[in-house]
Length: 83
Image (cartoon, rainbow, N blue to C red; front, side, top):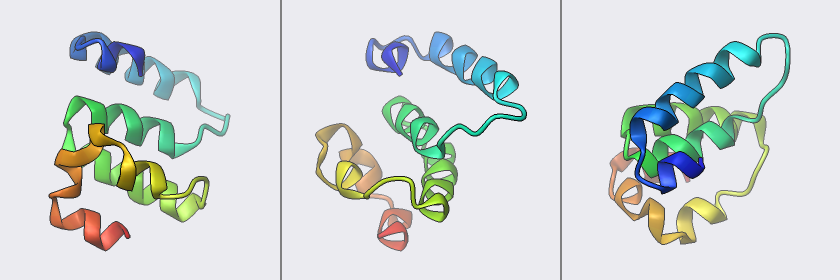
């Protein structure tokens, strides 16, 4: 997530790939991936993982509603579907 916040998308995507490979057989909350993809501005993957996190009921949607970093994602019609 830090690499995405620091504006290093290539490194963030590599770390996401490494995380996906490492988590085989282990539970990792989907909300973390939603955060990273949201910060990167990758709307399709953001919503894929956001909907997965909703299915897991792992977190409240408040952070995605209130944090300015997700403002661009809130403009997407899928955000209303998520809520």
